[in-house]
Image 1 (cartoon, helix red, strand yellow):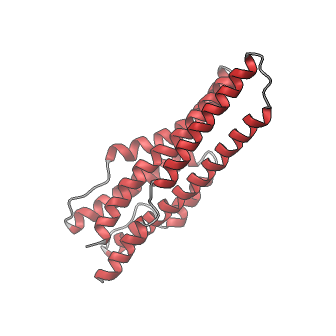
Image 2 (cartoon, rainbow, N blue to C red):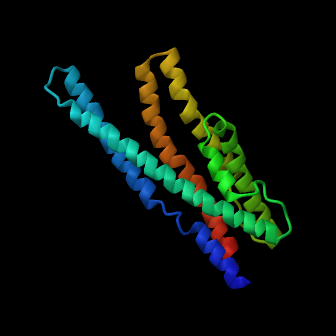
Image 3 (tube, rainbow, N blue to C red):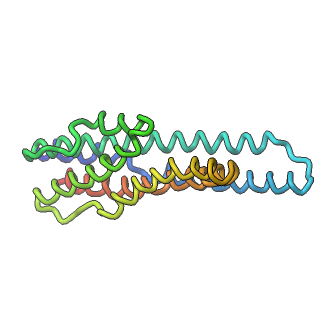
Length: 202
Protein backbone atom coordinates (compact mmCIF):
# COMPACT_ATOMS: atom_id res chain seq x y z
CA UNK A 1 0.00 0.00 0.00
CA UNK A 2 2.81 2.39 0.87
CA UNK A 3 4.61 1.72 -2.42
CA UNK A 4 1.35 2.24 -4.36
CA UNK A 5 0.79 5.57 -2.65
CA UNK A 6 4.36 6.61 -3.34
CA UNK A 7 4.10 5.70 -7.02
CA UNK A 8 0.84 7.66 -7.35
CA UNK A 9 2.46 10.71 -5.80
CA UNK A 10 5.51 10.47 -8.02
CA UNK A 11 3.33 9.98 -11.10
CA UNK A 12 1.20 12.98 -10.17
CA UNK A 13 4.14 15.33 -9.93
CA UNK A 14 6.63 13.78 -12.36
CA UNK A 15 5.68 16.09 -15.22
CA UNK A 16 5.64 19.26 -13.17
CA UNK A 17 9.00 20.67 -14.20
CA UNK A 18 9.29 24.43 -14.59
CA UNK A 19 12.07 24.28 -17.21
CA UNK A 20 9.79 23.95 -20.26
CA UNK A 21 7.42 26.82 -19.31
CA UNK A 22 10.30 29.08 -18.29
CA UNK A 23 12.32 28.39 -21.43
CA UNK A 24 9.23 29.06 -23.54
CA UNK A 25 8.53 32.24 -21.59
CA UNK A 26 12.03 33.65 -22.07
CA UNK A 27 12.05 32.76 -25.76
CA UNK A 28 8.63 34.35 -26.23
CA UNK A 29 9.75 37.55 -24.50
CA UNK A 30 12.77 37.68 -26.79
CA UNK A 31 10.60 37.15 -29.85
CA UNK A 32 8.16 39.83 -28.69
CA UNK A 33 11.07 42.26 -28.36
CA UNK A 34 12.19 41.31 -31.87
CA UNK A 35 8.67 41.81 -33.21
CA UNK A 36 8.42 45.21 -31.49
CA UNK A 37 11.74 46.34 -32.96
CA UNK A 38 10.62 45.16 -36.40
CA UNK A 39 7.44 47.23 -36.15
CA UNK A 40 9.36 50.29 -34.91
CA UNK A 41 11.89 50.01 -37.75
CA UNK A 42 9.08 49.72 -40.28
CA UNK A 43 7.39 52.85 -38.89
CA UNK A 44 10.69 54.74 -39.06
CA UNK A 45 10.90 53.99 -42.75
CA UNK A 46 13.47 51.20 -42.63
CA UNK A 47 13.19 48.38 -45.14
CA UNK A 48 11.95 45.48 -43.02
CA UNK A 49 11.10 41.98 -44.16
CA UNK A 50 7.56 41.26 -42.84
CA UNK A 51 8.47 37.58 -42.70
CA UNK A 52 10.50 38.27 -39.54
CA UNK A 53 7.40 39.44 -37.71
CA UNK A 54 5.28 36.59 -39.05
CA UNK A 55 7.83 33.98 -37.99
CA UNK A 56 8.21 35.49 -34.50
CA UNK A 57 4.44 35.47 -33.92
CA UNK A 58 4.13 31.93 -35.30
CA UNK A 59 6.82 30.61 -32.95
CA UNK A 60 5.17 32.35 -29.98
CA UNK A 61 1.84 30.74 -30.90
CA UNK A 62 3.44 27.28 -31.17
CA UNK A 63 5.23 27.70 -27.83
CA UNK A 64 1.95 28.72 -26.21
CA UNK A 65 0.23 25.59 -27.51
CA UNK A 66 3.09 23.35 -26.30
CA UNK A 67 3.13 24.89 -22.82
CA UNK A 68 -0.65 24.71 -22.43
CA UNK A 69 -0.65 21.05 -23.53
CA UNK A 70 2.08 20.40 -20.98
CA UNK A 71 0.02 22.09 -18.26
CA UNK A 72 -3.02 20.00 -19.19
CA UNK A 73 -0.99 16.78 -18.83
CA UNK A 74 0.20 17.85 -15.38
CA UNK A 75 -3.34 18.84 -14.41
CA UNK A 76 -4.68 15.46 -15.58
CA UNK A 77 -2.15 13.55 -13.48
CA UNK A 78 -2.84 15.69 -10.42
CA UNK A 79 -6.58 15.13 -10.74
CA UNK A 80 -6.07 11.40 -11.23
CA UNK A 81 -4.02 11.34 -8.04
CA UNK A 82 -6.55 13.46 -6.10
CA UNK A 83 -9.50 11.31 -7.18
CA UNK A 84 -7.68 8.06 -6.36
CA UNK A 85 -6.63 9.26 -2.90
CA UNK A 86 -10.06 10.77 -2.15
CA UNK A 87 -11.85 7.52 -2.95
CA UNK A 88 -9.31 5.54 -0.93
CA UNK A 89 -10.15 7.76 2.06
CA UNK A 90 -13.89 7.31 1.54
CA UNK A 91 -14.59 10.88 0.41
CA UNK A 92 -16.20 12.12 -2.79
CA UNK A 93 -13.83 14.13 -5.01
CA UNK A 94 -14.96 17.51 -6.35
CA UNK A 95 -14.87 16.13 -9.91
CA UNK A 96 -15.46 12.47 -10.60
CA UNK A 97 -13.02 11.96 -13.47
CA UNK A 98 -9.65 13.40 -14.45
CA UNK A 99 -10.63 13.19 -18.12
CA UNK A 100 -13.77 15.23 -17.44
CA UNK A 101 -11.81 17.79 -15.42
CA UNK A 102 -9.36 18.43 -18.25
CA UNK A 103 -11.65 17.75 -21.22
CA UNK A 104 -14.26 20.37 -20.33
CA UNK A 105 -11.53 23.01 -20.21
CA UNK A 106 -11.43 22.69 -23.99
CA UNK A 107 -15.11 23.58 -24.45
CA UNK A 108 -15.41 27.23 -25.56
CA UNK A 109 -17.40 29.60 -23.31
CA UNK A 110 -18.27 26.83 -20.81
CA UNK A 111 -14.60 26.66 -19.85
CA UNK A 112 -14.83 30.20 -18.47
CA UNK A 113 -16.90 28.68 -15.66
CA UNK A 114 -15.28 25.25 -15.58
CA UNK A 115 -11.77 26.58 -15.02
CA UNK A 116 -12.82 27.76 -11.55
CA UNK A 117 -14.27 24.33 -10.73
CA UNK A 118 -11.07 22.60 -11.83
CA UNK A 119 -8.50 24.66 -9.97
CA UNK A 120 -10.51 25.32 -6.81
CA UNK A 121 -11.75 21.73 -6.72
CA UNK A 122 -8.21 20.38 -6.98
CA UNK A 123 -7.09 22.68 -4.19
CA UNK A 124 -10.00 21.56 -2.00
CA UNK A 125 -9.38 17.85 -2.63
CA UNK A 126 -5.62 17.96 -2.04
CA UNK A 127 -6.03 19.98 1.14
CA UNK A 128 -8.74 17.60 2.39
CA UNK A 129 -6.47 14.61 1.69
CA UNK A 130 -3.62 16.30 3.56
CA UNK A 131 -5.89 17.00 6.53
CA UNK A 132 -7.21 13.43 6.56
CA UNK A 133 -3.65 12.08 6.59
CA UNK A 134 -2.53 14.57 9.22
CA UNK A 135 0.03 16.14 6.89
CA UNK A 136 1.15 19.73 7.35
CA UNK A 137 0.99 20.78 3.69
CA UNK A 138 -1.60 22.56 1.59
CA UNK A 139 -2.28 24.26 -1.72
CA UNK A 140 -2.63 28.03 -1.49
CA UNK A 141 -6.23 29.28 -1.54
CA UNK A 142 -5.07 32.51 -3.16
CA UNK A 143 -3.32 30.68 -5.99
CA UNK A 144 -6.45 28.60 -6.65
CA UNK A 145 -8.47 31.80 -7.06
CA UNK A 146 -5.96 33.92 -8.98
CA UNK A 147 -5.10 31.22 -11.53
CA UNK A 148 -8.59 30.75 -13.05
CA UNK A 149 -9.31 34.48 -12.73
CA UNK A 150 -6.16 35.32 -14.70
CA UNK A 151 -6.97 32.71 -17.37
CA UNK A 152 -10.50 34.08 -17.81
CA UNK A 153 -9.12 37.61 -18.14
CA UNK A 154 -6.64 36.39 -20.75
CA UNK A 155 -9.52 34.90 -22.73
CA UNK A 156 -11.97 37.80 -22.42
CA UNK A 157 -10.06 41.09 -22.07
CA UNK A 158 -8.22 41.06 -25.45
CA UNK A 159 -11.48 40.45 -27.33
CA UNK A 160 -13.25 43.26 -25.44
CA UNK A 161 -10.41 45.71 -26.07
CA UNK A 162 -10.33 44.79 -29.76
CA UNK A 163 -14.06 45.54 -30.08
CA UNK A 164 -14.38 48.53 -27.74
CA UNK A 165 -11.01 50.29 -28.17
CA UNK A 166 -9.07 49.09 -31.22
CA UNK A 167 -7.70 45.90 -32.80
CA UNK A 168 -4.19 47.06 -31.95
CA UNK A 169 -4.91 47.33 -28.23
CA UNK A 170 -6.62 43.94 -28.36
CA UNK A 171 -3.58 42.42 -30.05
CA UNK A 172 -1.24 43.91 -27.45
CA UNK A 173 -3.42 42.58 -24.63
CA UNK A 174 -3.40 39.15 -26.28
CA UNK A 175 0.40 39.07 -26.40
CA UNK A 176 0.58 40.05 -22.72
CA UNK A 177 -2.06 37.41 -22.01
CA UNK A 178 0.10 34.77 -23.67
CA UNK A 179 2.90 35.51 -21.21
CA UNK A 180 0.46 35.43 -18.29
CA UNK A 181 -0.91 32.07 -19.47
CA UNK A 182 2.64 30.67 -19.46
CA UNK A 183 3.42 31.81 -15.91
CA UNK A 184 0.33 31.81 -13.68
CA UNK A 185 -0.89 28.20 -14.13
CA UNK A 186 2.65 26.96 -13.58
CA UNK A 187 2.76 28.57 -10.13
CA UNK A 188 -0.43 26.79 -9.05
CA UNK A 189 0.54 23.45 -10.62
CA UNK A 190 3.97 23.53 -9.01
CA UNK A 191 2.35 24.17 -5.63
CA UNK A 192 -0.21 21.39 -6.15
CA UNK A 193 2.42 18.94 -7.40
CA UNK A 194 4.56 19.62 -4.33
CA UNK A 195 1.62 18.77 -2.07
CA UNK A 196 0.83 15.64 -4.13
CA UNK A 197 4.46 14.59 -3.83
CA UNK A 198 4.34 14.99 -0.06
CA UNK A 199 1.09 13.05 0.22
CA UNK A 200 2.18 10.27 -2.11
CA UNK A 201 5.52 9.75 -0.40
CA UNK A 202 3.97 8.83 2.97
